[in-house]
Image 1 (tube, rainbow, N blue to C red):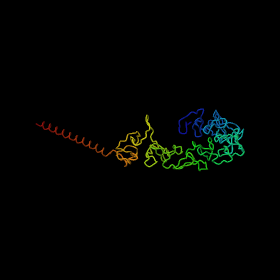
Image 2 (image 1 turned 45 degrees about the vertical axis):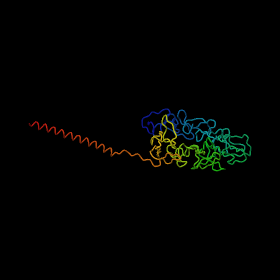
Image 3 (image 1 turned 90 degrees about the horizontal axis):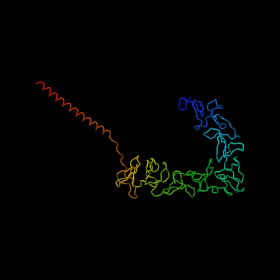
Image 4 (image 1 turned 180 degrees about the horizontal axis):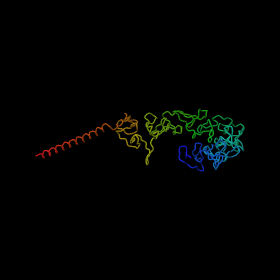
Length: 387
């Protein structure tokens, strides 16, 4: 049979392979959740797995029900495996999530958990007035220290009060309220997991994406205009940070958008050399390190970012290289050239051709001269022989 879908070479089936309907081998150990031998080992045709089947150790398709622990190992591995503590079967796939519990003690299929349910002895259970999640990232049922008057937060935990407004349930310096739950994070998003989000409003903790020109105020959790004095803490952390002296802010569309980098900003706060400073277009060569250009260095070439010292008679061209000419301004010190640097002229092929033609013509004249001299000498000896 064929070795693979794209390889038509002959192939002998391995113990971990079956025959696809199109006649090629499929290896189920290579992350192929759908590959399995048929219902008997003698039948090597691949059989698709579904929510009630897995592949046993001999490669045979094996059926299972909700009442047994057996299920598929993962979404990318169809091997049979047993459900462990904290797990259930979601569409036949063994799953671990704080948003799932088992349907019943003897039913290993998953049942959803939200802010009104918790996991009691592995089973999804509706919370009573004195129950809550153990924590925002642990949906196991908790009844310790709770009274019937306590209120549940959208995260499943108790507010510890008789009210559960966002201000009672979320801390602006800590995180925001997620619209949908996460298998590991639940309904709370700490700022480290929602770095480019803010609170929607002073009393609304809903996670809201930062819009252009804004950063997140670390004290209020709200969006704040960056203006010319602030940046993000990094390209992936929208927390407001003061723009330090000697730095500039990378513009949208660059790898380090909104973040501060060492560089100049002729028009504050946008970086002048955004392609290099903000995109880091060239990796450092071996035994090299990055050095701030400041007003004393330029690039060695348009594609060679090695530092070279700027002379007093030089300025910095648009591509970061050194050019000869006046600088844009003297105060504050900016090395950008006052006028655009000339583009180097390409070598003239015509001139080279003319030179080559000239040399060819010279050789032709020289050869003609030698030929004429030889003819004169021959004529002289011919005349001598006549006497």
